[in-house]
Amino acid sequence: MKFNRFNQKKMKHRKTTLGAVALSAFLMSAVQSDETITRDGKTTIVNTEAIGKDIEGYNGPTPVKIYIEGKKISKIEALRNHEGPKYMARAKKLLEKFEGKSVAKAKKMKVDAVTGATYTSDALIENVRKGLDYYEKNK
Image (cartoon, rainbow, N blue to C red; front, side, top):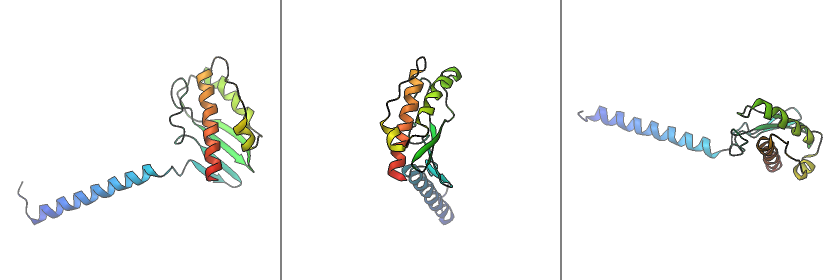
């Protein structure tokens, strides 16, 4: 291909565009997801998909959404995961133990894993703790 002024301008434009795309991708990955902590009226919602992506149950990540109202946990729900439905159903029951507790008390609670769903339970508990830590630092 012959390099004339038109082709040089085209190449320069491509390099600039690629640089802008790379910079955008870097900035997006460096900043915590806007979806990690959101507000809906008086309720603060912490989503652990991004911050707990390395916390795995038996078959992979087990993210949760923590609903906090007035510094108390109003609800915790397990998000999409690859745990077996039977094991997840057992392990999800332990999430109810956190509901109604203050964030400070919930962080200190000793919650036992559910027999028969130990990996899943431990991952859910760890996600809750990570989400509560994130909430306290970013509320």
